[in-house]
Image (cartoon, rainbow, N blue to C red):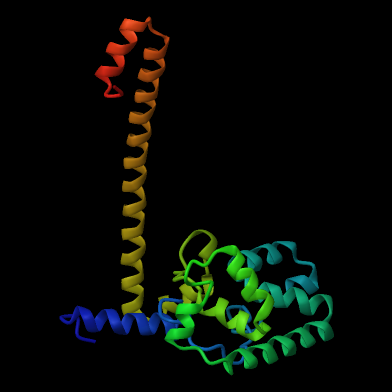
Length: 224
C-alpha cells in the first residue's frame, strides 16, 4: 500500500475494516450463512469452558460485556442445547430468505428505516411487508459503527484490527483524534454553559429590579 496515495490508503483501509474485521463502514453485504462466534481460548489455544454451564459468575459478566454475541449463544446452549440448536437453524433459514430479497438503489430510497419516514409509514410497512423484507430493510439501515468505547465496544473486532499493523496504527490514530475532539467539545460546551448561566442570572436579577432599572438592565444584556 503506497502511503503517498491517501485516496487509495483510505479505500483499502475501509475494505479491510469491513471484510477482515467486521466493522460496518461500507454498505452491508447481503446476509449470508450464520457463523458461530469464536470461542475464547486459553494460552494453549484450547476453548475456555462455558461460564453459563459451569456457574462461573465472573466469567459470565466478562464475556457478556466484551463479547455479547458469544455470551448469547453460550447461555442458550447452557440452558437447553436442543432449543439453542433449533433457534440457530431458524435464524439460518431466515437469513437465507433475506438473501433472496432483491435490494437496489430504488429499494434503498423507499426503505422507511432509511428515508426518515414517520411512524405511521413504518407501521404500515411492518404490517404489510413479509418478515424477510422487513429484516432486510432493517439490515440495510444499520449506521456506521466503530468498535470503540461505550455501547459499540467490541473486543473481538478490536482484536482483529490489532492483528493488521497498518490498520492498527490507523485505528490508534483515530481513537486518539476522537479523544482530542471529545475533550475539546467538553471544554467548549462547559464554557457555553457558564455563559448561559451568567446570562440567566443577569435576566433574573433584571426581573427582580424596579421597573426603570429593569429596562436599563435588559438593554445592557441585549434582551431589549
